Length: 94
Image 1 (cartoon, rainbow, N blue to C red):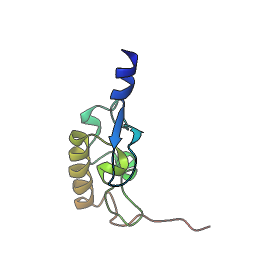
Image 2: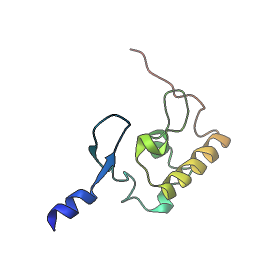
Image 3: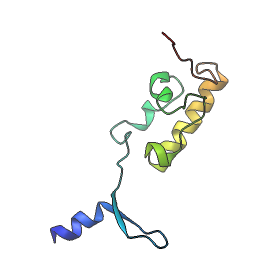
């Protein structure tokens, strides 16, 4: 019974002409953050999900759930419209 539960935590990935590998599913990093917390005013949170070039990071990379990713996308777009987020991240070179 415990073997079945352990298998549920893994994704089976099979590629043509390769072995089946087990990879652990990523959990949502925003699971414990309420939906009201994800808004355009929370610039510190939003900046964690933007690349150096100013693009939003995909769900595949960040492992954020679909519902939270949609809220993140709208919050980032609103923050850009209000000029709270710059289109490009500034890098400090020291």
